[in-house]
Amino acid sequence: MTLLSIEDLAIDAGPLSLVDGVTLDVAPGEVVALVGESGSGKSLTALAVMGLLGEGLTVGRGRVVFDDTDLTALPDSELRNLRGADLAMIFQEPVSSLNPLVPVGAQVAESLFVHDRASPVEAMKQAIDMLRRVGIPEPARRAMQLPTELSGGMCQRVMIAAALISKPRLLIADEPTTALDVTIQAQILALMRDLAAEVGTAILLITHDMGVVAELADRVCVMYGGRVVEQAPVDPLFASPRHPYTRMLLRTIPRLDEPPKGELFAIKGNVPSPRDWPEGCRFRTRCDRATDACTARPILTDGPHRIACFHPVEGME
Figure 1: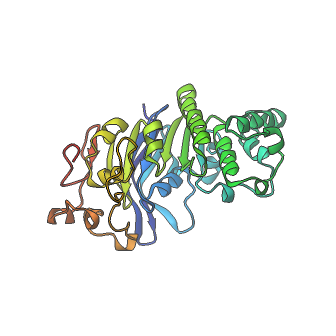
Figure 2: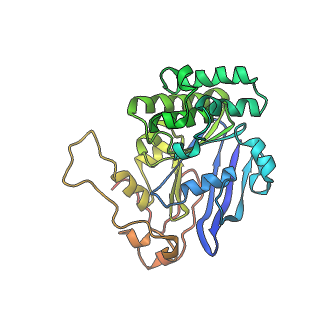
Figure 3: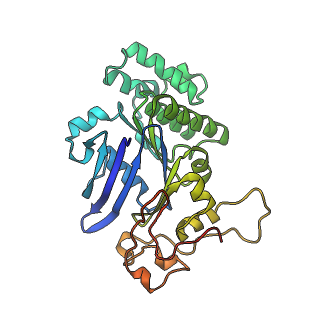
C-alpha cells in the first residue's frame, strides 16, 4: 500500500525547470530519505507536496497523490485542512518558521485545537508533554516563552514538537536535526522511529547527513540537478551504490574504522545553476565515467534498485 505517490513531478520557475520528472512512493510506516547536494531539488519537492511553493514557482506537470487524492488539484482551503492534521512538515529554518509574537506552547498546541482533536486546555497539556519529549528542559515554563527567548536549537525542537504532536499520517522532515547536538539528535530520531512504528506515519526525510539516513531510513532516493538518479533500499545502496554520484557522496563521509589517508575526498566542481544544466545527464560535467553517450538523458531502470546512468558502477570500487 502506498500513502504518498509523487508521479513525474516537474516544478518550474518561468521557463526554467527546477525539478524534472521526480517519481517516488512512500508507504505507511516507511521512512524514505531524499538526499543530494544543496540545489538538487529536495526541499522544492517537499514544498510541492505541502502545497507551499513560493511565488513564481509552479507545478509544471505530474501529480502528488496522498491517499488517492491529488494534492496539486486541491484548493488552498482543503489543503489547509490537511496541514497540521494529516500532513506535517519540519522546516529547515525554525526561527523564521515560528511566529515571534506567540508563545511556543500555543504554537505546538495549535494543530490539536484547530482540528478539534483536543480542548485548548488539553492541547496545552499535550504540548508541554511533547516539549519534554523533544528534550526541552522546564517545558511548562518554556511553553510560555516567545521564540525570541529561545536558542536556535530549542526553536528547532519546538518545530519538531509542533510537527509530531498531531501524529500525522505523513511527516516531511527537512534537515530535522541540523542544529541539534548528538544526544538530542538521537532522542529526536527515536521519536520519529516510534511515530512510524506506532501509528504508521510515513516519513519523507530530507537530509545531508548520511549517518542519519543509515540510522532512520528504509529506502533512499538520491537527487541531482532536479532529477532522481538512484533509488534503493538503504542497505544495498550503502553497500553497493550504482550511480557514480551516489558513490561519490558516500566517499565524502569520513570513516571511523580506518585512519585517514591524505586529504578527505571531495566531489570536484559544484552543482550548476538550473540555467547552466548540461543536456542529457546533468552530472556528466563532474563525472569521471562520462562519455558521449551521456549527452542523452538516462532513464531510471525498473526494479528495487533503480539507477539513471549509462555507465553504472558494478559493486564497490
